Figure 1: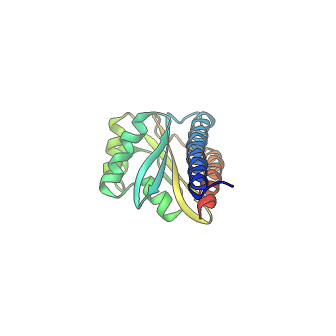
Figure 2 (figure 1 turned 60 degrees about the vertical axis):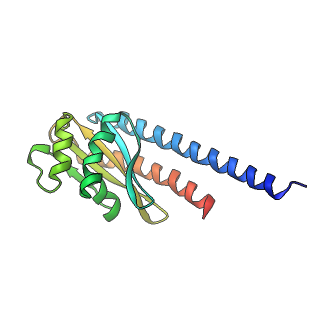
Figure 3 (figure 1 turned 120 degrees about the vertical axis):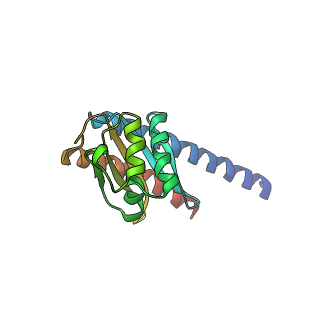
Length: 166
């Protein structure tokens, strides 16, 4: 019969594997989402961890650099997408006044448009899948539909990880 220490050790190893597996799956979902929306240059996943936003996975480090502007100011499309569970689209970074610090950071990286899509797990907004494009008015309604399919997949990965430890 295993000792309580051995049982705890086995459970912690299983938990580590689950979280590593979840991170790998989220990276795969992000990579596939970028490929599925041809106008997308970068894709990242914003999550709220311990009450603070972070870019959990991304297709390019530039996505993480762009996101920092909204994390610093507390305003931006990915934050609105996750907190209010709504689609947020910017057609022209140069004309966006609602999230100006974010738009300026995105434009400095050559991005001209973006869309942030809510990721829902267990009925709650838990993340945002963020797409960036070098084209103005880059994202169509069809792109939003395609992106939301990947947001659903990310939600399934996150719900499975949460369910195991609740």
